[in-house]
Length: 69
Image 1 (cartoon, rainbow, N blue to C red):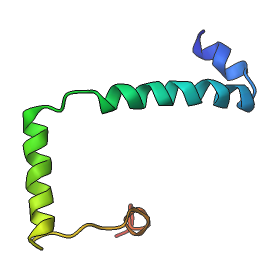
Image 2: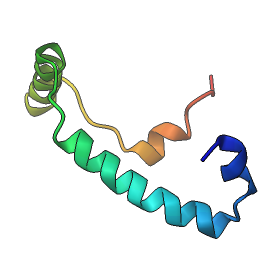
Image 3: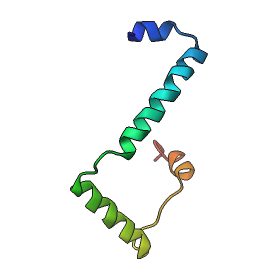
């Protein structure tokens, strides 16, 4: 199936195709190995939040500030 073929499909058919693709990708990502450098970075960030040095921000709050100065 090509991109042109997909573009011809109605939205309902595209959604039917997308759902199993996303489920499969999620499984693959869940089972993927995380590079050690990424794991260390995540651990460092978690520690900064736990010690109060940094704080998590709500995505809904953050996305409204993107592109605003």
